[in-house]
Image (cartoon, rainbow, N blue to C red; front, side):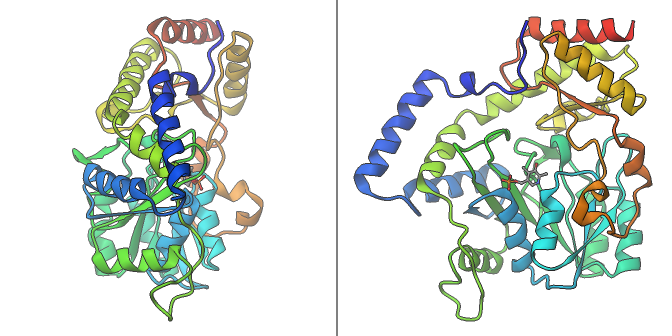
Length: 365
Ligand SMILES: *Cc1c(COP(=O)(O)O)cnc(C)c1O
């Protein structure tokens, strides 16, 4: 059996393709390539779905992070807290605006930002902002740092690139009083036909500022902007996919539950059962005892036709430009090298899940 990591074929089914072809033809006919009706429609619907007042589409998820830092007034030389386990872009955005990433430790069991480490780093390094990441689609404990951040005037930017469909205390990501960024890169839960991203906010002034920054500073002479517009065709794809996203995310949760049942007795360290309903299950990570076993397990699965990845298995400070970043990474290093991510797209069938579980049980037998 061949089991790929992603399944774009079923996602872009025939009737979806027909409707998208129709939309693209219409966009060509009208010549409305930027800021079209689907941009406005998607922004309205996505804000509503995520519990935010405003949604601002931008060119990609990394821009969404950079523009959020700029909108909050973070300046070159400022210190910004970043968890040690995330996709490189979270820290890259901080570097790109001339600010300094400070490593905040993660909880070794789940890879989420550790509130205690954050508070220590905030006081030790005079943090101006922090970027909790809803990594793998798990809800980061943003609620546990908000009061502290308010007291110390630290801005919170939630990196929700993997968290479309995630719930924190039963509420969708985007409903809190922070800037919240998404990526719609083709592999994310909600995805474009290329690059796109967005920022959510409850704040009218911040929303206006983001609009100015993403469009060359137009509308405010005092703001240095950039081009980070979202193409109309991408917005048309996103607005169409939004109609199906709830069902697709539910399907991911079912796959996660089945993996939990089938792998509960293996030496793999699975995520806490409490995440079954709250995570978007963008990824299904499991911890191996050590790096060697993780590599051997990945090889074993590959020989059986099963794709897997070791996403975010290494701390950010293993990346060249981040090597000398100060901070804490004891919990981060505990996870280092040990993470395997199993396929978890919404179209994974029961017999495929059973086959993967059988091969994993075989490996450990
Ligand atoms: C994908 C991703 C990004 C970057 O998004 P792009 O659209 O690729 O720029 C940032 N942070 C996290 C956690 C991501 O997964």
